[in-house]
Image 1 (spheres, rainbow, N blue to C red):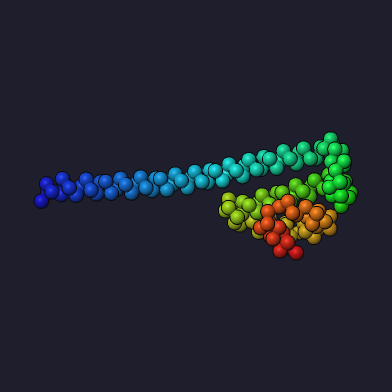
Image 2 (tube, rainbow, N blue to C red):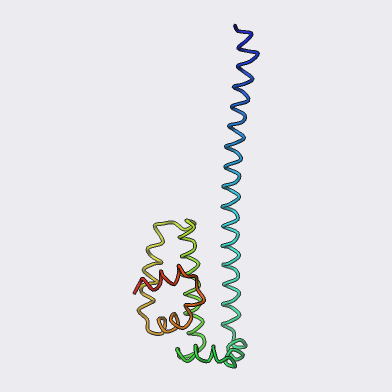
Length: 150
């Protein structure tokens, strides 16, 4: 009986344990890989937003942008291009944080603070004007979120 146990049962149990460990390791690997990919995408997007904001806030871009009827119309909503770009940068930041919240990569205890900031910003008339003029460039769910704050 002991020989049968050693010969048949122990290898089967060992194989089952090994299979279980490999399965758990594979699931963890896939989860870590997905999380790293999400974090990488968010970091890249953050850097792109920063570069865009830096470029748009330059005097050179503001002068060039005045040649566009779209920018001329948007600049007319505020006192100067810098105010416009400040609002756009805040909207981009809020949308990024909104994405972080949806993907659960921001502490859920911090999200209400950012949501309240968004609500407060929407009480600023110039902010609301720029939002109305530019909201079509944002994602549908972010538009619904911001519009629900009013």
